[in-house]
Image 1 (spheres, rainbow, N blue to C red):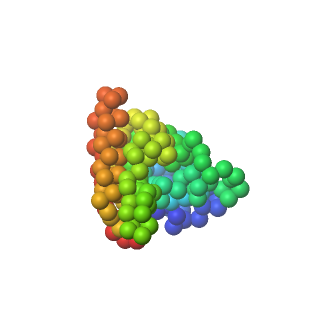
Image 2 (cartoon, one colour; image 1 turned 90 degrees about the vertical axis):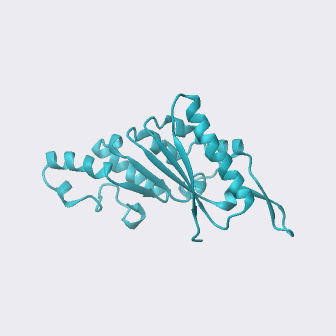
Length: 198
């Protein structure tokens, strides 16, 4: 379910809900939980995040969400925030905060561009090195993943031209995610998915 396909200017209208959710109040309450459990929601912007959060808050259904896909995850601390924001960094990742509130969440997908995983070291030779995994972990406030108590799978979706450096960066990040969950006694499968469309 791509939330960007719907009007996000009014946080009280949700046209993507099935028609059955527009019947009686009791029917709506039951049907919306079933709908949320059976869908994966793509959040592509700050406004998508606020829009979807408004639905979950109004219907008290955070617990029913099973799948979230965060498009352009690497921009959470820039493009996702309103234009009036004066700072370019934040210690809060609003995407992962939403995920942490969804207590029934099982699978989360984080889509990132290759350029956010590597550093250019030689422009003439077009040489890159992977960004250290701890730097990535801190930059994207990934420790908030651990707060997603029901999660069983994390997918890192890469977008762009793939290099050895990006392979190394993703391999380290996947291993880090699994290790951090294991440290708190939980088994989570982290996978790398290559997405070739620019």
